[in-house]
Image 1 (cartoon, rainbow, N blue to C red):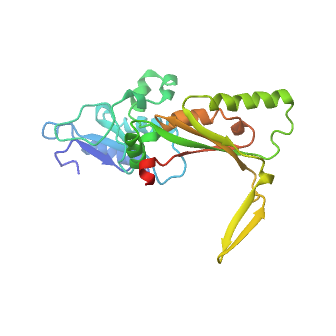
Image 2: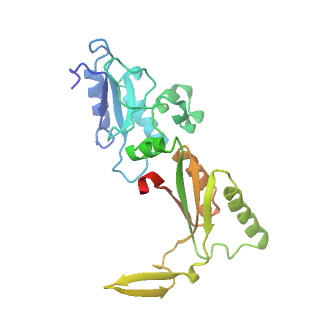
Image 3: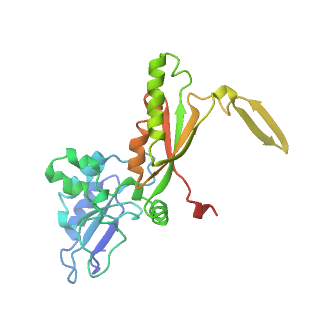
Length: 260
């Protein structure tokens, strides 16, 4: 592969069991001069097929390991599908993949890392740019997307609170609701007011109560506009339900132009 006079190589690696052997081979056979251009190895550090999201520490460690075998100036990062290659170099004359040089994509975690490790973190794409769909929708909306924060609560989680504590929690919800980036939302009535509708063989069946008996119930939502997913995740972590036995599911809203 490295016999090609090409500058950029996007290499599936995150799903490999012995990743360091791949780093070693790439470092051994990639060339600093391929007809006038250095060969940059964009190593897959994100596995899109893995339901677990890779944390910054994991990605940092992978890149530090790769840097033992591949010169830093010829090392880049991508996901295993090659949708989000990222580095800080200039485009070679042989062409380059579609990537963003913006320093906005530097993870905030770099502030807590030693200086010698920060260079490796800078070549990791933020999660909001890991898929083609995410990048395409972001471009369509001029750099901003809408995200739904679906709030799931544990029944009875407020029962032990006094009036002052309830008022404080309500204030936290109102603070998020009053944020100019929060463009919509609603609180639902308690789960015992729900009605569930099903249609079976043309017959409509209506039952009282929720669809299923679960530990968490859908209590409301916010619609939030942001430049990237990380910003919304930080807001979601401030929602009281997340620390009271519940959770918040964050999902992108389908842009209106894609709905038609």
